[in-house]
Length: 272
Image (tube, rainbow, N blue to C red; front, side):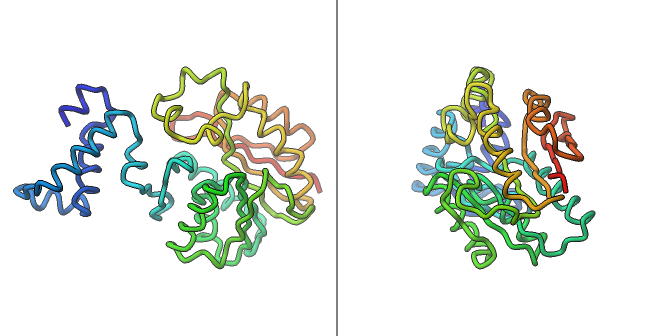
């Protein structure tokens, strides 16, 4: 932990414990219940290799290969964006709209699925939903398929290699959801070093302004959604007003703030 503190690694104790649990293949309860446990020579070597990678800036989730999201364990590699707690607001927004609509079996498309975290969370909460998940990256789709299989949702989700909604039917979906790349390249210097250095650039940066992918997604979603259906997108406070402008002509445009009171999700309804 001292090494992490000296190198300004955030949350040094949490990182040290996480990597020790990874090395020992145990949980936190075991660590606290067995403080006398000494590492073998092999464990000591593997632990210090993991520490060195973390000090280099590699996210802990890429070192351990795992991240929790919506109560499920996800495999993550540098091919996919690491699922973050803020994205759970996307799930909550969809579930809220689905309850209001009284639709127990909606047809949903998750655009840019990455690890599959959004698609799997919705499959878990909406057992009758028909779910499609697209990504332009074959490597990301492979990870998403693995996660679906590990969580026993492989028969529930239709994975498609596609650029946004290409190849999917018009007027077919009750919800289109996405956590698209929305950070502008002009903001790159303000992005955490470990994010811009190690996470997939195409999943983080959405062009010079951060709006470029969303600007293409909005008209495609308008075509693919049924009348009265919903588009739900993760955003940042930086682009919230511009995204609202892109949604001119849509109904019931609402922004959901995250726990830091930062605009995090925008939802809009296609006119009937």
